Length: 354
Ligand code: NCD
Ligand code: ZN
Image 1 (tube, helix red, strand yellow):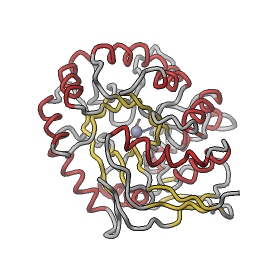
Image 2 (spheres, helix red, strand yellow):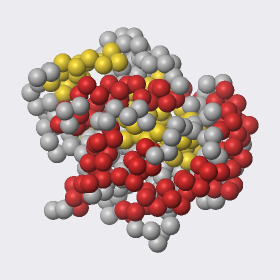
Image 3 (cartoon, helix red, strand yellow):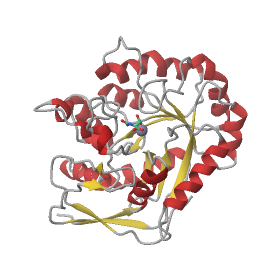
């Protein structure tokens, strides 16, 4: 049995780093394992300008240990007031890698998101022209739509019409949680990809709701039935280059998770690679792990693969990850509900390629 696995340094194509004392605590957790991460802009207030993205990037770099070889890739938060020319210029200058679409009200800090897709058409058309990818939180917010159906309804009600209107737009359907989402990405030709989180490769809605409510498993999109989870695992382990890791690691202080109206988000950064390795091992697909965590995403974004390697070693069960102490309060680390055996051996220097 393989007990040592060396792969190109991985990337996280969907990450929440927050700001201030939370940023200071969580950024090193990601930088320890990942060479690059696409950093979400849903701060309060959101990151809506190139200057805002550059300043946030500087704060992230400041939060990292000196020896960290980590490159934050920045995103802009799409609003109905976003200026097409600013987006195109910020991308051309290398300040932002992608633009993020949150339907207004879909999730944490999405109040400034998009209400009417018509109002962002000029931006999306300019992005298509300039090759700027759009990362999409793919859930409708219609209160009439059941929360477990919001992703599937988004595909037909919003995403398909959008892609017909702007066919050249490169799209990432983020944190796919349904068999329908997987099928949509598979059936849509080039120019579309799907990210998958570590936790959605493990969780079903039973983890969240059966035998007691477990707030640390509450995230958006919410975990679905086992058949959907199984479709995600099949997509991740298939070797299909359109699927890659975006952890959506989303820290909230425990006090806001264990709450009458708890926040959505699972903090997975410290264990994400160990969890994904366990899922790939169980599927007999460890030979495809590198593609999923280190190659497919860079290829989609047209970025070089990372220099340097990361080694995972299979051994004794790791101690439970417990909580990360942060200046914003303790944050519970995602517990997959089974023992983790793949430990990340500290990465060799080599750094991020871009
Ligand atoms: C994210 C957060 O906390 O910022 N929460 C989550 O449940 N995933 C927002 C998001 O990406 O939906
Ligand atoms: Zn997210």
